[in-house]
Length: 299
Image 1 (cartoon, rainbow, N blue to C red):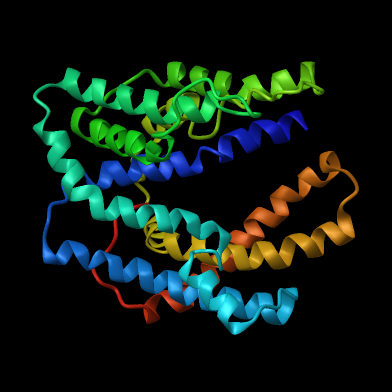
Image 2: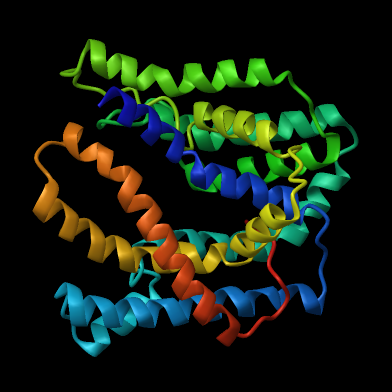
């Protein structure tokens, strides 16, 4: 369970990394008609995979709802539970040109650092401190946490910070270990600290460290570059369709092989690659059928 906890903490850094990458890739975007065409690609993908998800849930999972209920689920970004990220990203996409104007207008590196720190204090600290019924920090602004990550990604793109890899690895290992160690030492604790792997300030630090470890890496082998490029183009599709396979595979495997969570953790090495390959296969077929618009740069 300790090993599984370490892995879970690392996987929870996924959304922060998406947001950092969105800021990194969109830092130079400006208002234009072609820019807004990027919405077409994302919205069409969401609608297509929502309809596919509805069909699978109705026919194979036993999730039966009325047509109106499914329509409301699609419109409300609830047909695919993972689509909350798309709902959030659409607003971030629309704001990006204006955010870039704001960021570039700041006169110095120091001002940009203060902006990121301010956003972390007003949006990330509430997520960390206000839990288990406690309200000890102003929380009105906690929903703007994507801006803290977006501007951090923009900052990394502009200033290209470098930190020794061993230092970054040490910080990552420490952050990943805190919660599993506390859970190991005091499993019955009434308040789980949950320090790393999410949107809290520690999650921002973790995501930045992982980002800095990876963003300068160069893939020199043409075949590997080609595969990674194709997976990158299909990443949105894979993300959206993966819920279909999560809904089918996990119940099937848990019904047959689950005894305890400790034992079932080994099936991670089967289920995760299986979901990934299945999602890639569907995305490879569906992606060419979708309107392209302007190629997005979010992941």
